[in-house]
Length: 65
Image 1 (tube, one colour):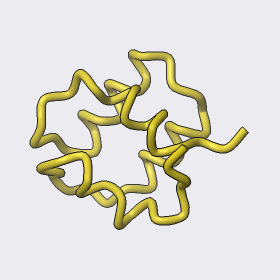
Image 2: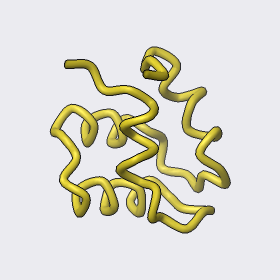
Image 3: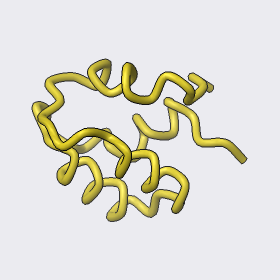
Image 4: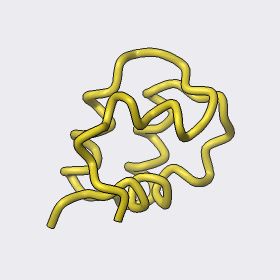
């Protein structure tokens, strides 16, 4: 099953923003995210994200639901 933006948001919901890629990955791993979701987050550039929406330009191919 494909990962969705909603699923990503659920797994990183507890991360205080702004946050960098490593913070998002740590939260996803802790929350039991699938290997596919972890791979998607690993593909993000090593930068700080101020809002959840800042992720989507890098994950355009990921469906919303």
